[in-house]
Length: 511
Image (cartoon, rainbow, N blue to C red; front, side):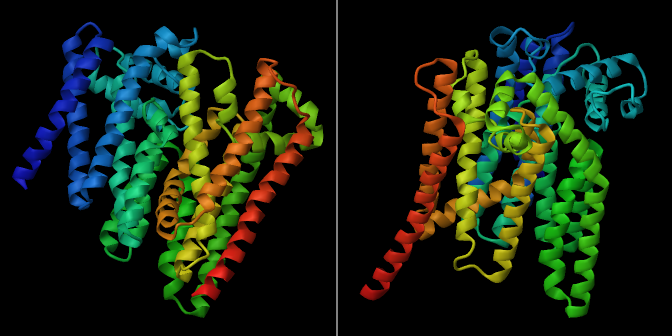
C-alpha cells in the first residue's frame, strides 16, 4: 500500500507543478510563491485522490486515462479562459476578470469578500449574500481562500476543485456501468462523460454544477452497488447526498428523487411479494406527489418570470413569438430552450471569435448527444431483459422530463438551460454510451438516420439564420418551414421503419 501511495504521489507531481506555475503567473498576488505552493499542493492532492479512486475501484486502463484526461482538459481550458477572456472577451465585468459565467463571478467575488472580512463562514448561509441562495459553494470557496490564499484572490484555486469533483465521478460511473451492464458500455460512457463539452466548460468554471455532476455519479454507483456491498452503497449514498444538499438543496432533491425511483425499481420491487410491491409503489407515488406539490408553485412562478425575462431581453425572441402567435409562446420558448445552445445560431451569429468558439463547442456536444439518446431509446425494445428495458426506459424518461423542466425553469436562455440540464448528465451519458456500443454491435442504422434528420434540420435553420443576420437568402415563413421539416422528418423515420420491415422479411426468406 505504501508503494502504491508513493506511485500516486509521483503521478501527481508533474500536473501539480504546471498548475502551480500557471497560478503564480496568472494569479501572483503580493506573494506569488504562496500561489505556487497552494496550487501545487491542491492539484497534487486532487490528482492523488483520483488515482487512488481508480485503483480502489479497479477500473481498467482506458477508464484511468479518461479520468486523467477529464481532470487535465478542464484545468487547461479553465486556465486558458481565465487568461484569454480579459483580452478577447466582451468588455463586461465577468470576462474582464476571467470568468465565463456571471453567477460564478458574483459568487466567487462574494466568497473572497467573506474570506478577507474575518466574519464567520456561516454567514454565507445568511441573506446578505444573494449570489448563492444555498450558501454551500460560497462558504467552501471562502474557506479555501481564507486557509490557502489569505494574501490575494486566486479564482484558479476553485477551478482546481470543480475540475476534481467532476472527474472524481468518472471512475464511479465506470464501475457502476461495468458491474451492472458491461465493460464496453462503461468505456463509452466514461469517455462521453470526460469529453462532453457542456461538462468541460462547467468544470472549467467556478460553478456548482461540476460538483453536483461528480457527486451524482457517486450516487449512481451507490445505487448500483447495493446488491454487492450494502456497506459501501450506504456510505456512498449518504456522503454524496450530504454533499449535494450542502451545495444545492433543490438540485439535490431532483437528482435524489431520480435515484430513489431507480433504487426502488432495481433493488426493492423485484424482491418483494405482491402485497409489499403494492405498498412500496404507493409509498413511492406519494413521495413523488409530495415533491411535485412542494416544488410546483416555485417552478411555475420562476418559469413565468424567466420566460418573461427571456422574451423581454431578446428582440429576436419577441419577433419570433409575434410570428408564431401568442398562444404558442410558452411551448415555443420551452422548445427553443431544449435546443439550446442552438447550433445553427452558434455557427451564424456574428459574435466575437472566442464566444462563438465556445458556443459551437457546447452546441456540438448537445447535438451529438441527443441522437445517441434517441437511437438508444429505439434500441431498448430489442433483445433486452425485462429489467433492463424498464431501467433504460426510466433513464430516458428522467433525462427527457428534466430537459423540459430545465427549459421551463431557464426560460430558453442559452447559458442557464444547458447547465440546469447537466444535473442529469449521468443518466444521459450512460444512455449515449450504451447506445453507441449497441449501434456498433447490432449494426443499427438508427443513429445514422437520427444524425441525417438533424443535419437536415440544421441546414434549414442555418439558411434561416443567414437570411436573418446577413440577408443572404430569402427567408422562409416560420410555419411553412416547420411543416416542411415535419414532412422530411416523417419521411426519414417512417421510411426507415418500412425499409427495416421489408429488409427483415427478405432476410427471413433467404435464411
